[in-house]
Image 1 (cartoon, rainbow, N blue to C red):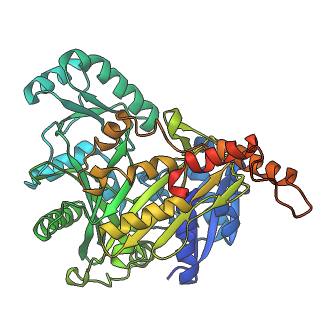
Image 2 (cartoon, rainbow, N blue to C red; image 1 turned 120 degrees about the vertical axis):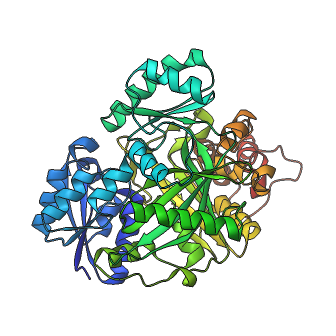
Length: 506
C-alpha cells in the first residue's frame, strides 16, 4: 500500500479522501491556490504546496505544477477527486509516465468513455440499450436539422465532451434549433475546449439512475447497487438517494449486469459509474460513464457499508477485489443533499462570503462531508458546493424523517445557502411518495415553493440582535415587568422572524 498520496483537488472531496487516507495510515499531500491558503483541506493534510493564483486554469488545472508537487513531495500516487483534472486523460498519462500511480482507470478507458459519442458507438456495437440519437459530432446546422427531423422533436443537443449540464440544450421545435445549436457549441467550447455536439431523443419525464461499479486489474468487476439522481436543477444533480424508489430486484440485476458489461468493454478498472435514463415503463438506456468517483458516492457507502475511497486505493495498488457479486448486500436507505452557497430566493445566485456561524447536524445516521469551517470566507472563483449532508435510515421513510430533522439543525449564518430549499423539498408530497423525475425540481420551483420560505440568515441575525437588545434593556433588579406592559417591538420582530416565519422550529 502507498505511504504518501497527493490529492489533486480542494474542498469537501479533498478532505473526504484525506480522512480515508488517515485511517489507512497514508500520509497526505494537499495542493492549493493563493485564495485557498487557509482552506480546510490545506489545514487537514500532512503537507501542503501552493500551485498558483486563484483562477483554476492557473492552479488546480495546471498539470505541470501538480506533477512538480508530486515529485518534490515524494508522493507515490495521485487521487484526483472529482472535477478539475479527474477525467483528464492527459493528467493520468502524465502521472503514469512520471512513475506515479493515478488512482483511477487506465488512460485508454478514460479516453473512450470520456467521449459521449465514442462511448455510445461502443455500447451500440455491443447491442446494449442506448437513447436514440447520433454517435458522431454534428459539425453543421444542416446536419442537425436532418437528424432532428428524422428522430422527431423534442430532442437534446449535448456536448460530446460534456458534463455538469454544460453545452446541453432541450429543443422542442424546429424554429428553436439554430439558436440552441450555436449556444450549445459556444458553451461546450468555453467549458471543455471542444465545441462538438451530438443529438439524443428527449425522453419524457425520465429518471436518472446510475450504477456504481468496481473493477480490479485481474479482470474482475462487480456492481454496487444504484443511485437515484433524478432531482436536478439546470441539469445538475442536487439531491440523490439509494436505493431508487422504482427499483426491483430484477431491474437492479439487469441494469447492474449491463453496467458491468459496459465497464469490461472499456477495459475499465477502479471505481466508476455507468449512468442510465429510465422511462415510465422502466425501460433503461445507457447515457454515459463517469470515469471517477462521483459526488454522490457517500449514499452507496452508507447503504453497503463500504468505503469506496479505500477500495480505490487498494485497486490502484494492484489488489484483487475483496468482494464478489453475491457478497454485496444493500441495507436501509440513504439520501444526500448538496449544500451550496447560493441564494434560493434569488434564482440560486452564488453567495460567496464569510461564514459567521456554522452548526452542522449530528446524531444517529447523519454524515456531513464538508470543506468549510466557521470563519472561512467562501471564494467566488470555484464551485459553490460547501458540503454534502447524508442521512441513513432503516427504510426510505425513516431516511426522509432523519433528513428533515438534520436540515432543521443545520445552521449557516453570514451567507445564503440552499438549506431552506431542501427543507421545502422534503415536505413535498410527491417527493415523499417517490414520484420524481428529472423535471421535478423545475416543476416545484414553478409552483412557487420558495415564495413563502424561511427567513434568510441575515434576517435571522437581525432577529437575534433584536432579542439580545431586548434582554439588555430588561430590568436588572430581578423583577418582571407588569403583565399589561406594552410588548417590545424589538422582541415582537425577533419572534416573528424566528418563530412565525419558521414554524417548524416552534
